[in-house]
Image (cartoon, rainbow, N blue to C red; front, side, top):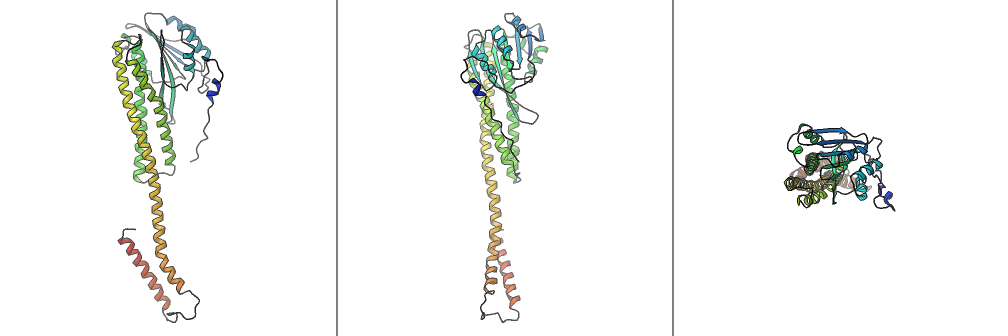
Length: 358
């Protein structure tokens, strides 16, 4: 199977010589318009809307309610800078928001907490998509920045609309916990799919029915595991810092929930390490299978050669051009020689069978 040509990226060259805080979008270009949705709620009421003008976001900054503003479309740099100015986000924070290659991180500021993590999901071709999600947590708001529409937050939206659970009765720190928890819960779905793929390949190799290009699938699966590991492992440090409760916007009653997310991340990380070892075992198993197949071929060829060596010797012996060779004058010498050769053939087959070489 011919491999598609890999497209090389050169996003980092755009940063060379730039002033710190310069906004450069490094993701895939998209023609989709900016989409900004807003949930403003209290325990008793909720207002859901789509902000047609980014300037309207400032109306929710100092309210007594809790506000979730979700921004889809990081290529719209001017709008991102505008909302950053309204909520006093540092220029370096805005730079990290539009830099989709940013490693998951957490930065603490006086008026807000900034977090970057990776959201994982499978596309229609069953390829892992890694999308960057940035969070700005304030006293009464959470602003999320995503590359494009489509996420794992639909359950959170429904909980807000239906007032299920305690989400509308608590502060913005619990809202951010719920959003992060949704991302982490989706990691389990990714891990489960990866585990199923590994088990299918393992069963195929054990059965000895390995397809011709199964080594390519193993390599692709190994790359997926490494991508997932790179996206998930730094998040443990982030949640560990949040559960310590050192930031004023993370209240003590919410720390227990963040600790639960940390436990889930530990479980996911352990599964990733296990699958990583299994992938290496699959490669070893594949090479062993190839080696065994080669050995079977060589065994058959060796047995055939061994059988024909004495027969070739006899045929060569009596095919020499000497005038005086015993048995040449026998009337049935030809048939006797054929009989001897056939007997040797049967004897060698019996010997190989007895030694279990056949």
